Image (cartoon, rainbow, N blue to C red; front, top):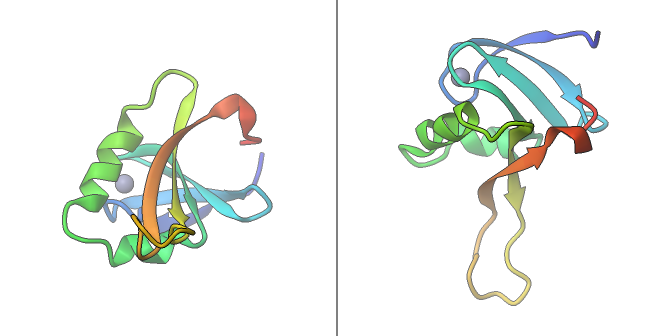
Length: 102
Ligand SMILES: [Zn+2]
């Protein structure tokens, strides 16, 4: 077992636990409210300042993954062509658990 650490859930604020995965690039949270999900180091501080409703939306996504998948919240860099994304953007996507070493 990997050692788990206690931290309030970055999505809902409930008392949660996590451990580091992906060479400490990501935290794998287990929250009594949101279930299990991943957050990258860069995404975590942005969650705290995300617009109203985002954390709730991510929480809903985290609660309802397809079988064998887990939600990963990361930050995409600005689009290289300067068009669509003008700033770093929080991006939720489902990752296949078997591709991760959880
Ligand atoms: Zn939570």
